[in-house]
Amino acid sequence: MGKISQGILGGFSGKVGNVIGGNWKGINYMRVKPASVANPQTEGQMDQRSRFNAALKFLQPMKDFIKVGFKSYAVKMTEFNSAMSYILKNAIIGTYPDYGIDYSAALISKGTLSRATSALVESTVAGSVAFSWTDNTNGADALATDVAMVVVYNPVKVQASFLIAGTRADGNLTLLVPETFSGDEIHCYLAFKSATGTKVSDSVYVGAITVA
Image (cartoon, rainbow, N blue to C red):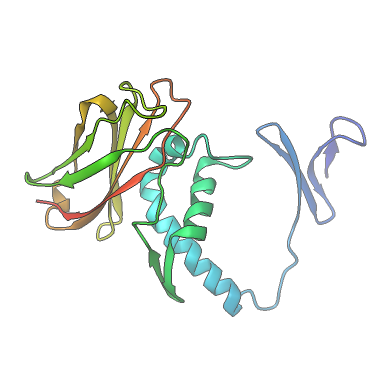
């Protein structure tokens, strides 16, 4: 049974017929419960599910990072759902059922803060990935105190490692990764967030390297 909490014009919670009402982050919403179908495995549904699974496989291992990277971009949805939406629209490649990720087109952070410039990455020591970039604090809204955020994704292990530390002015940051990553190809990203955490930059795809 649904309950109306603010009069007939207010939102409601619960179920009335096939309409479900609720509140998320102070926003009243209603959604229609889908009717059962005889064949839920249509070609279109399976195609969409395959795309969704490819995006989920990529983002799930870095979900805690996504909460920071997509914080300012998420509008009336969670940070993770916002990232999923971006990846589905911009970074899915392949054909059904073999969908994958265009890592160079993927963003794991999205915002208006100045991005990293001249970013590089290498791994010469086992269990270690070294990022470097040019300090561009003289341009636009970039500040020396902006905090660096680095992520590596290992598609072989379906795992990610990330670190939020150091500053834009440092020009470098070393990320420790599991020893089991040794010999695997990883995809590397770099972004910044303001010291106050109110702004983030778009992530930069730094490239793919093999872990020492």
